[in-house]
Length: 439
Ligand SMILES: [Zn+2]
Image (cartoon, rainbow, N blue to C red; front, side, top):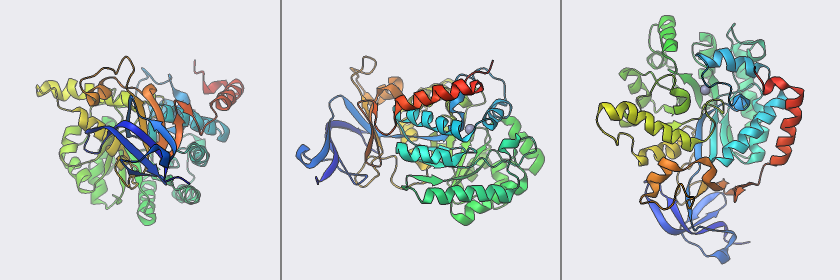
């Protein structure tokens, strides 16, 4: 038995302060970063680090596993897309097609450098759990709890009690696993469900000590609807009613009043911005949120909103910030590279509510990726950090390690049988053409 499980030699490494340590060794043992030294003779697996940048694996802070098959379907659709297109699509998924959806999402995530995620919820979350457990990914899963009379029959919870029971079943199932997957209780949006359901889910999260997530302040009309129904803006009302759990994640969080931003800061509510998805809705007030200490990460909002590659979300967000905030303030560094990469790593990891993720330092969990930096679009460079923001993409991810285990090496997936999954997909698509064809 050797001292280390994996050793990178002579590698560049992105540190938590967003500086790069050049030409270092990096040792991994028992799922954690052991330190910045080691000799090849001491390691089971040695990964030569020349032309590699090791950085924390990215966290997709808002993904919809059950929408993996909606790629290409949503572009140019009119709002509100999730009610009109996504829900009817999800209502037709079966346990089998949900398993396939998760397998394709797992392949996609690992290939583009995502090592952890927060799923927004699905009817067959237990099927997702089986897939993600085998794939070796880290994340949180939820059951789609929706009691709206407008929800498709297949996705409607019979009652708040039934919704809570489903969430707790998933929690218990995940507790029996590896520990990489955990529960997160959710409602789609506060206005999509009854007040009874909203209160019941949040109170269950508080009682069980489980994080709570929901889509919040994503569309201006949803904020107006909330104001009409509750007389206050969403975050202000939730605080007044004592309905903010100790661990809460707000997906999107675009249309925020100053008072709401204070609520986010006061309760350490984490925000997941989804730049590609959001760019048709609004631009979040991220500089103001970050200035208040709110932890913000990036989410893909599922493959239907421009794919799962978070490097693209980083770059797009930089463009959105500069095109809006940068121009009005004549400040081209309104969202610097360090801030963007900190959001994608530490900010996203904060949305997981799991200890020791999103940083490369001794003792932290070994969730990391190695980017090839010698591609013609990346090399040579005068500033590698800037070049990662400007030009890196998911296809540059060469190795991926989660919980100290190699899940992709030299771009070969080690935990998923890609050929089998593609064959299975072909078989299911032939039988259920509505999964891939919408015309
Ligand atoms: Zn979403």
